Image (cartoon, rainbow, N blue to C red):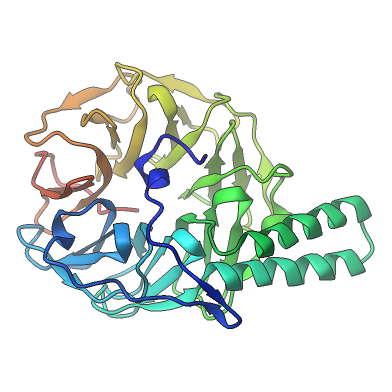
Length: 357
């Protein structure tokens, strides 16, 4: 089981595999889309884009006051969406799908699915077995790749990070990790670069300064200082699952997850300091503000704020508590929250802040 997070209990509709990949069905058009479970929201210039269950994608051009559904090429749950500018964005989700938009989220095309991802893993595992090196490790990788093929396209991708319009990385369940250097036209497995022999789930990837960080279950914590070419394991401050990573304005990194556990590192992940989240409730999303402070949401509907240098959270008043899953800043400064009951606009009043990273 992935976690207690709502992300992991949304199985989405079943999908059938064919010789050419997944028999994908477009998301249905529904008047209820804007009130459905939304798992992530991002800002694309003046527009807001949110994704969620059943492949639903909704957009707002009035700072979250109203939302409308746009066409999606898939009908399985989408977990995360990010934009690098006002036009280029990507979304990932169940069945190993990666979607791409070049027009600010108004239209989307599929770049990868679970069958294709398994084929990439299997091909690269076979190549590794033919090359000199650790034969036992190569055989284990081949066994894992074959298991992916046998299981079918049921492995979700859970987070993504694009460094620019061409170079990006995605991570997901069972240790899945892929990179692209052509904007998603092709993908390569980077599983062999990550010390994760048991295939633990990788939940989050984030950039802080010149470093990339990856976090997952059972204390998995990794760092790359060369934009994902290599990764090194870090000593984790917590043996439980970390669901999210959030960079601060000062260049530090915050890791958060189960039971309200949150930690901050100001030395590139070498050491970590515990942050006080006031109660042991699982943390679900993060957002960096312009002043360098960080907002975190939890399953009880709280929004917590950590100012730079503070180790104890302050609780931000919320007018519509719920199960919060993601945050972004609208162009007018309003805070927009995705939740299990759709989108909440201006749910929290905060000072001017940066949009979702």
